[in-house]
Image (cartoon, rainbow, N blue to C red; front, side):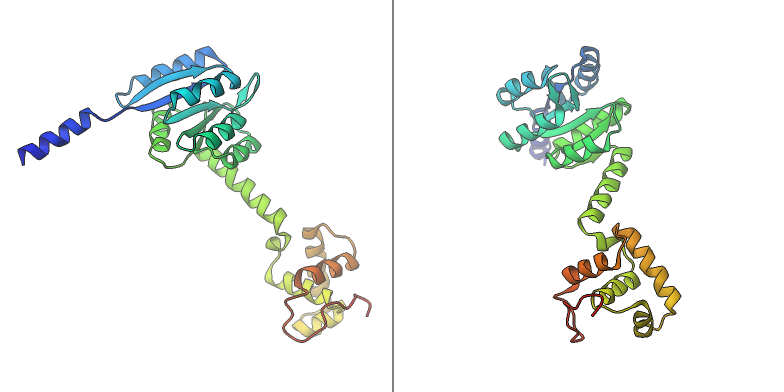
Length: 240
């Protein structure tokens, strides 16, 4: 039993610290982050740079566990550095650090393979925790950054699938418009008042960014054309 404990203790002593590379064009910021991280026994800053080109030249040789990258740089941006690092050294976890709550940069960083994204306003202890988190293979997002990312993803999803913003009733009405039915006929089919159908039509037109019924009909045929189950011919125009 004693040997097992000793073995465990020696294993802790031999544990290699997390190797971190810092990229920030402000020397004062780099120095502050370096001092903060190196005060931790399990973290070692192995290199730093103030430009994207310098970072890309140095990181491959140093092979850090974590690269803390400033998003805004004088000769480029941290997102591009992240993308390059991830393509060449997938084992390096990139933690984006920025003073901007820029959801565009956040989205680009995540798509470039960043393991985390924190704002410079973060507390020192939280930054240390973020470094440890991404070094362990997990992802880390500042709460505000996370909410921005989710909003952007929802927005992109809605753009990729406009129908995602429609209610079940609106989807059904759009499908019937594609079959060429009038508002009155749709009302009869769905047991709705004609005025109610008209309101639904106006709402779905607004959501889809359309102004004319012919636009909606053509779109409905394209989207639902292969999914009709009631035997109705899917390619009839709105006036037929």
